[in-house]
Image 1 (tube, protein in one colour):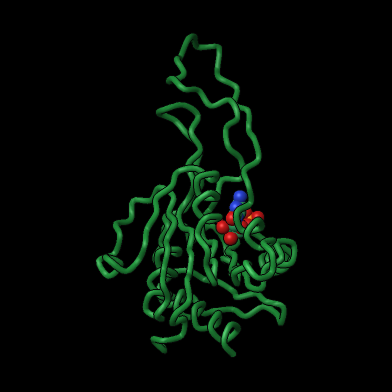
Image 2: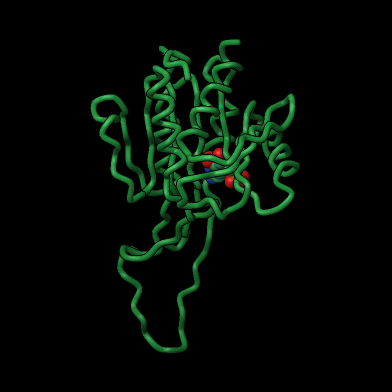
Length: 221
Ligand code: C5P
């Protein structure tokens, strides 16, 4: 592993889930521990990058080696994450977060009371911004090199290649199934315009290092 692969580059990473409140004590979220995003942050730091980690609510502590080196911003909702990302210029954007596709339109300012056994609240959903697709559409001189992540449960590689093209991003990491959520190991394929490259199943930090090395090859051939 070469320590200077991303030297001098500003790397922005989103990690974890987002949390969309229903009322002050309840909400809707996604399954994501944040481990893969944190591993990417660590691998990017090791490779000399200037790292900004934007994290949804996770129970992971900030690793000691991030102290004074990684700028961490905590957010809750997808809109907050969008706002931070849109205001953080970078050279590389790793969109690892499991962003909630919808937010609650009829969010209540006070806790919803259980009034009777029969009546249940009806939630109205509203589409959240697609953070990655938005950044990938920035004007060419402001657009970072974007890396997306996708968890698919079937037909992984075909769906992931379609997703890469639809989101207009040069590189996408396909997760082989939702069984890796919260785990320390992962099995992924790296997908770009040249094809689909499987990475052997290993721990998330080792995978992150492979991804960073592959990214560096494409950025600085
Ligand atoms: O379309 P799908 O959600 O499967 O795409 C996953 C990729 O898009 C991930 O990289 C994720 O971080 C990003 N994404 C996003 N904003 C959304 C939904 C997904 O940035 N609202």
